Structure formats: C-alpha cells, structure tokens
Length: 234
Image (cartoon, rainbow, N blue to C red; front, side, top):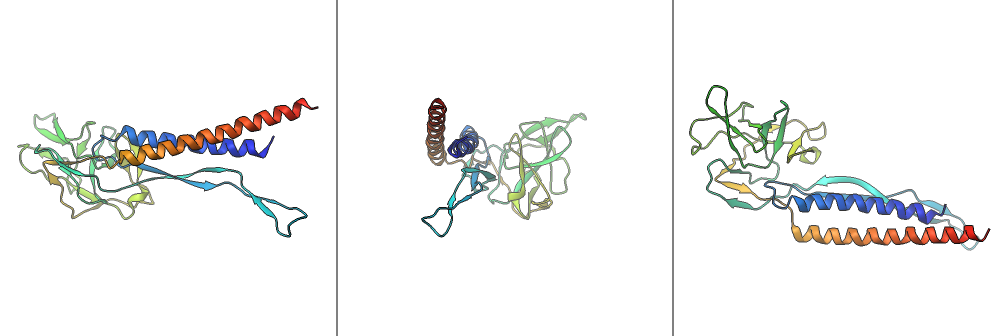
C-alpha cells in the first residue's frame, strides 16, 4: 500500500478528533463556567530516504496524530444576575467543590446554585445536577435564608492543567494536579461566570479542521485511484 494512503488516513483521523473537540466547545458556548479544550498535534515517525544524488538522507513524514487535549482555564466574563444563589469566581485557579450524587467530590466553575431539600426539612445548597456544594471545611452548606451570603468553599490546585473533565462541567483531581487546597479567593455573590468559549475562534478552528480533513480525504482518494490504476496494469 502506498505511504501516502497511511499518511492521509492518519491526518484525517487527527482532524476528525479536532472537529469533535471544537464542536463540543461550540455546544458549550452558553454553559456557565465552561472552559474550552484545545487540541495539540505531534508528528508521526519520519523515514530516512537515501539517494545517489544526496550525501545525506531525506526525511519523509508519515502524517500527524493528536498528542493531547488541554483545557484552557481562561477567565470567563462575569455577568451580574442579582440572584443571591449565584456565585462567580474571579480567579483562574479557583473552583467550587461539589459532592456528587455518586458520593465523589468533584470541582466546577459553575456557580449557578439552587436549594435542595434535606430529609430533616431544611435546605442544602446544591448545583444543577443535584450535587451538594461544600464549604471551606468540606461540609454541606445548610441554608436558612437564601438571601444571606453562604459560606461557599473555594479551592485551588498546584497544577490545574492536571484536572480531568468527567462530564456535566465537573473536574476531577489527579496526581498531576495535586490535591485540592482551600483558596483565599472570595466568590462574588449575585453574579455568574459565563462560558470562556470564544465563538469566533472556535468557528475559525472548525473551518480550518474541515479544510484539513477535506485535503486528507482528497489525498486518500488520489492514492486509492493510483493503486487501482497500477493494479489494472498487471
């Protein structure tokens, strides 16, 4: 099989993955506190080509692949809502802690909270997915008057790039991120952080990925046609 076939196939797969990431970013352009992802590529192995006309070997590449996907923790715009259960974070390395319905503690930037009824008749501060928001001590926040400022815990990490997305706008710590630590950042009540997705940048990235995918698909078609022609000469 021609090398160009494998090279173009690898490039098409990489661009398809980028399209998936970019589409997800665009889908979350209105998700409060959402942080976009960015794809990084790396070159595949190079092959040395020797020829009589050159003393040094030439290097022929074999396409690219997705090396990693990074979350860009840039600050989203702060929008005033005057809703007392809304809280916004004004620092990039700051997160709310939520005990999710499966019992695991995860972290989020979405401060659009609500009230969840306690079995004893009171109310807890919770998020949109039913998770219980934690205070600075890691305990559930009991709400007596929703207009009062609640003791919402704010946490930070040594390396927030090590956090892993787990869905529903949640982030989970890893050995790379280090454990969560209480932060001195104060959440702003009555405000919400908008999505950090720049729609113009994401549409531009999608157009570039679509064109690159189409280019690789054309190379695949040309390689296939060439192979069929050669086989027909036998």
